[in-house]
Every structure is written in structure tokens, then in C-alpha cells.
Length: 148
Image 1 (cartoon, rainbow, N blue to C red):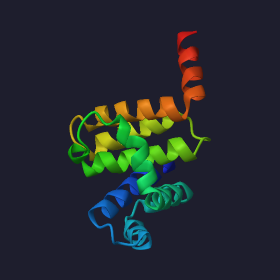
Image 2 (image 1 turned 135 degrees about the vertical axis):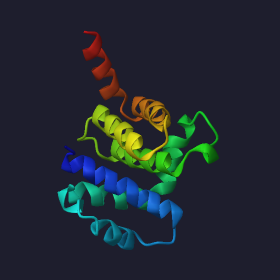
Image 3 (image 1 turned 120 degrees about the vertical axis):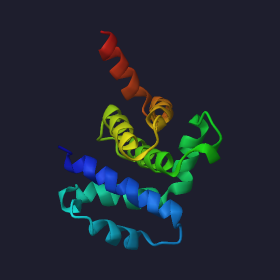
Image 4 (image 1 turned 30 degrees about the vertical axis):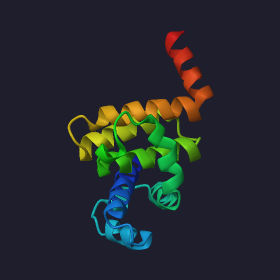
């Protein structure tokens, strides 16, 4: 059973992916298209809108935040992986109320659903490094708790 927040993230990733393939398409049209899905009503609409519109507004900034952690050429990153990374980067940097392990886990699970065979490993590696930089105190606290 998927949570409303998981569904919101999945729809946001689908919207980001759609935008990547059609960058001239307005976000409002992408949202309208996604709302036609029968399961959209079960999604957390506020989170969906915050993520979709937040990512599309800040793609250059978010891309710049995740790019240093790629261990491959940017051209080799699939559009699905990129959409998931943009979603998670937005949440890690702009939604401190959501614990970083939740964001990373959601990103991994969504990549397993929509991405290639080992895409989730790449996404996990990038997000672990990003979280260690942008949420250093939270990461250190979590590690200390696990070791203690």
C-alpha cells in the first residue's frame, strides 16, 4: 500500500520526466495531464505541487547541487534517474522537515519502480553524498545514533 506522500513523489517524478522530454511544456499542462490518472486523488497534492513546481523553477540550481556527485558522465544519467535526483535534491535542500533517510529511501524505491536495473544504486550513492554535505548535522546525528 503506497502512502499519499509516496504517490505525490511518484507523480512529481513523472512530471519532471515529462518536462525533461518536453522542456517547453508548461508545468500547469504537465500537472493537468498527471491529474487525469485515476490514482492522483490518493496523492498528497500539496507535496506533489511543492516538488513539481519547486524542481521546475530551480532545475539549474538543483542540477548544480547533484552534478558533483556523479561518478559517470552526465550524459549517461537516465532521464528517470535525473528526475528522481532532482526531486530528492529539492527535498534535501528545501524541506528540512522531512528526515533525510526518508527522502533517500523514497528516491531509491521510486527509482526501483521506474528506473533501470541498478539505477537505484547510483541514486543512493549521489544522495548519500549530497545529504552528508547539505545536512551534515542531521547525518552525523543519525550515524551516532546507529553506532551508539
